[in-house]
Image (cartoon, rainbow, N blue to C red; front, side, top):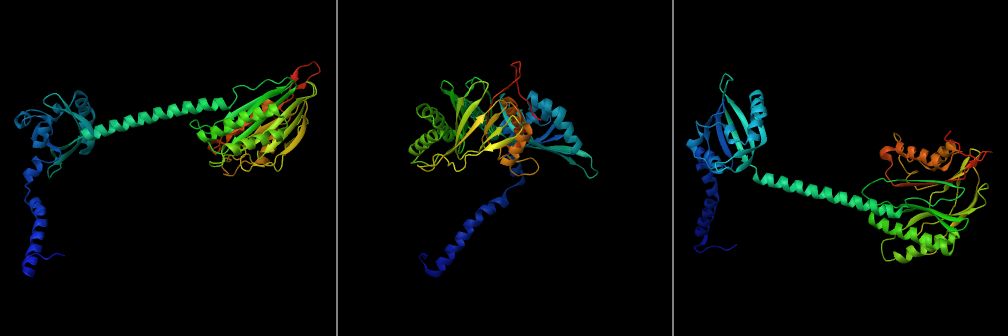
Length: 427
């Protein structure tokens, strides 16, 4: 510390001077007069008689409104300072409530200035009573709400812009989602097809996808997949997967080879970025005649197993064990299963939003076995009936269904002897 000239005595004198300087603001506060505190307060004050006539008003409010004291005191009522809307509110709500409970706090009103301009204000009034509890006068505090009003307008504008942006993004997400999900599936002679896509959120693009498309006369490809994540990143992978699967199936329709092509594309496209992977089940339908059915070859890459609902009322998974996720490793392994889809049979594909939904009341996941039991309760059932029943099941989960869910059912209709198609509904 630097010692001032003069040694210790000067040092002590200097310290006392510092303390005096520190005490000056407090001294000024103590010398502040009550009248000055009232007249020049940072808010408006006025007092009125019980009939509303102004008896006292401070300088701050006079300056805000542009009046002289003699123009208001004894000549005007508080309600005369209000706009038409404010006066109506004061007479019908503010004043009756004040008389009933003795205080009204923080009410937004607008005051008229002498030049016709308006002052947005927050008004608080209290009733002063005498020793016997009889009302004497009304004391009112008025706060300038210009800044608050501007803040509220800015907040409202920001909220409106946010709502507009959300609507824009929702429209964009919906449009993008429609490009990733076929609006209508290709008709297949001798096959009934039904599909359903449940959106967990209208604001995000989901990662589930499916398709059914012709490859050659009497042969069709189909697939269902689920991309990790949601939003724009998932949409990129979904788009790549959907079109790669279609292109690969045209050049080499062997299901395991189709998945291998997609796996190579995913590893090549996203090798420098965060891994983007998906589960896929790809199938090849070959017609064996409209009255006979279809031969089906399935290849699975980490996707939930398909369910076959048979004409005899049974239902079982069609397992493709060991199939690996696509996009994780370059040499992923994929397994194949074959089945015959006969009249009265229905093949169901789905994404894990269904089996991972939380069941109401129990909090656990729905699970593969519960789905299989549900399928057995439906069989035999046509494709449309299976999708309708599963859609109702999805609705029963309520908030427990927190992921997108895709359903694709393909069934061979049974024929009456007279040639009319039929299919049993849920049992």
